[in-house]
Image (cartoon, rainbow, N blue to C red):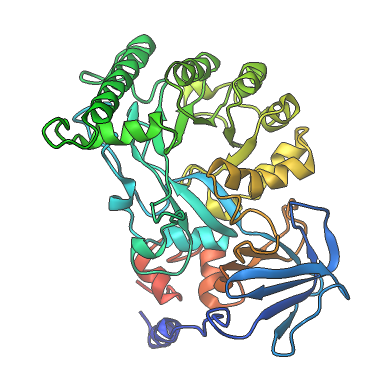
Length: 435
């Protein structure tokens, strides 16, 4: 590395001033921007007041009284929308189950996420503030997912979202179709795949019933089984199934299993979802749709279509979009709703699909997904319309703290690529330079 590049890299290592006035400091007011609340109509030249990491007020100019001690930021000409929520991501290089068995519900993906991986910063550069990080789809069940807030952090614990009882928020990842069909002990056919899943849920029902009959008596409680414990959470509705499924018949198999065992499910990918939209709607199954603009890959995804979001919307299905990062780049997430609108989805539903509807599918809509008083101050500041190919994400804020700034050299590198953008070491040094 040249002396000049080395100096630039060292300067980039100096921490940027944190916008952490929300951590017990003065309130922060964004004024003049077009606000896209999602939960209501757009507000031209709006005012958004943030205090203590939460949205304290929102309205048109003249409707929001600013505290005397508020820090005011003029964002005239910009657009502010809720931070984007990705319902299916693999950032942080997670790895779940191994080759020892096709069903491994005891595996926790939170034990395999590198929070210092550059992919997390790239997601911030795309305006993402919350993600469902999943293990892969090479198993019928590859482990427990985890919902993360994309704060700046050094440990996974700092990113975890917890419910009111302190429980780590997350679902469980399942899959069918071709990915999980391999040599034994994996299934070789679709029918065998479904049979193995049914057998495991029956075992979980038996385990649940034994626990209930034992009523806490240590002499009667069955030996602890981490995998069956996780499946009991699914049976009892405490953990939702996030199910990878592409082909129309595979989708219906998932719905059949969900009805038989009573578990809640979000259907992921649903390349053929437009073919069975009525059946999905009748089952009240939400869909997390992937938008791929380059054909190829899986044979079962040959009929993937941009119109899927719109067809499902008109059928009354809850629709979100996801990146499946690295399948599609988190920095280009807003491309998904844009392409869906081009193919017939309504603008309102498409924008909700990467914000409020996505939050609902993760059961986090009381906290995130829209610009409403009392919700977390998770924001994306854009330089144009959210659905325009020309629009850039300028800043990303999580709970009132700025985690991405396009104006900084490091932020520009994260957003636009270039030497070191995906390299954990070079990206931290910012300036790349000679290797």
